[in-house]
Image 1 (cartoon, rainbow, N blue to C red):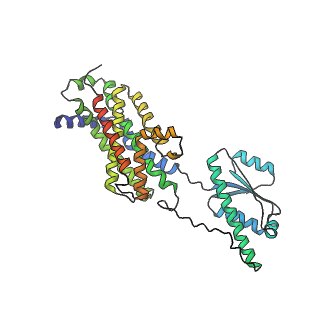
Image 2: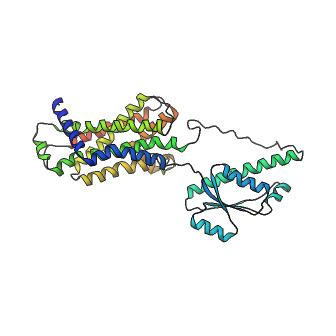
Image 3: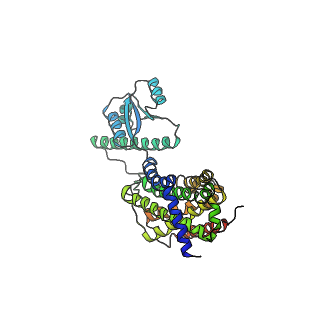
Length: 378
């Protein structure tokens, strides 16, 4: 391998990128836009659920219950309802995602028997949001009634019942605020790097075919290995720059805590970048159309990274055959490493398995990419 020819090929590819508006847009604008859109648009936290109130009791305890719904931050009271027809209209229009009906005898039943019922109706077209909202509502109602019962016992000189009471003291590690952003945004970094890297390199060889310069490239003394390395070096530098931007944005913009080793983060990011660049180059060698190559690269990167890597759905909740298939998804290992480094501060020893898998993946992809390009027109 000749270093002079390699650098000349890298310089030529850099000029190609600079003169191609589409490549510049992918390299410079796509990471920024995706970081903003995905960082702010993707969240598993359910907040400010629009809630309609049908308070038939009109008592102090019922008003306190309504105030607790709003004060929880999970719900926002929209307006009161008068009858069942207005309830249906509000649900159909989307004004309310749920309705809380407090019956007329709510306060009387609570003070005399200690047991009272409250009806909740939720729009279940979004089953996940509905399940979370029901849990939130049950928590608000339970805390309100328990607080009322405690005050009522004190007012009447009764001692609270101590037998059979279990006090649950929950503690959470690694994501103390249970903020889904801390879990999601490290995965977004992997999605952006996979998409941008593969999209850029999928145009490298196919661009030569479309512009009619492949004959000139083949006639030069540059070897196939020098062609691959020369074409990938500029994109590797761009990939590392995008990775630095995304990772710095994760820490300083979105305030996701970073507790691991920077060296491990940089090394695994470089491995992941090699994988996605190698995939894009392989696609570009086998598909001579830039449009076709970019579409195939999108299929091979975006779908597996977003659906089968653990970024969107938990892998351990998938069917066994799908779990086995995720072992072939390179982004799975990088996302595991990112989340462990950011949230847990895992050591190199604890991350040995996913790092080894990512390294093997990188070696296999680069080996296949090096053998894919041949200096002939067939």
